[in-house]
Length: 113
Length: 111
Image 1 (cartoon, rainbow over the protein chains, first blue to last red):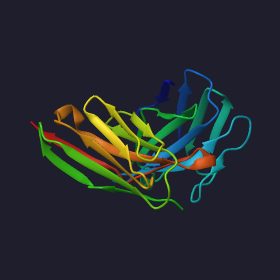
Image 2 (cartoon, rainbow over the protein chains, first blue to last red):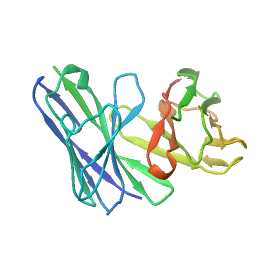
Image 3 (tube, each protein chain N blue to C red):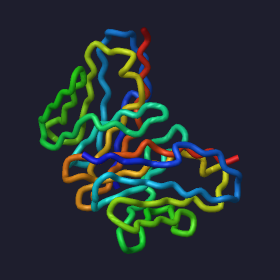
Image 4 (cartoon, each protein chain N blue to C red):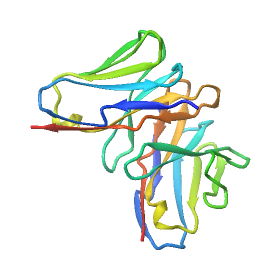
């Protein structure tokens, strides 16, 4: 199994500012993902964080708004840039461990005011 | 694209009662995950089903994947307040290793 540490756990930010969320895994993993859960909705995949190369973004998400870093196999960051109240969500990182399970961080609850 | 529909959207049961949550896919499921989410916590992995007809249990929670592999059910026996939370089904995206999720079922258990 993989243990994921995600921080911050919550933040309240002013619109127009940026927030960087960190995701640290206790073991090397190949696949790391970033999800968003908007109020009242299910999880939506933002992007796949690729080690050593640019992240792969899903439709509707762009690098300028959600820049992602993946410097090694145990760490990734997601930045929410130029925030607006519509960005208020829970952001979750996830890792794949083998072929049987996916693990999630505790999430970052972001409120933009 | 594949879609997952969960039912019911929300559920309130009395402690001790049994309940079932369903997850229906628009396409064949190659891997179906059940998670539980509580406020302030991450997603807690419950179990994964891969084979048609497969059934797994963990404590008082049982999940099944139907033979046609397009629907899964999660059954809780003798519910307790600790079972309260949001239950999410997730489907394996196949070669992409991405998961897609259902809309979630909010469960409240009244003492």
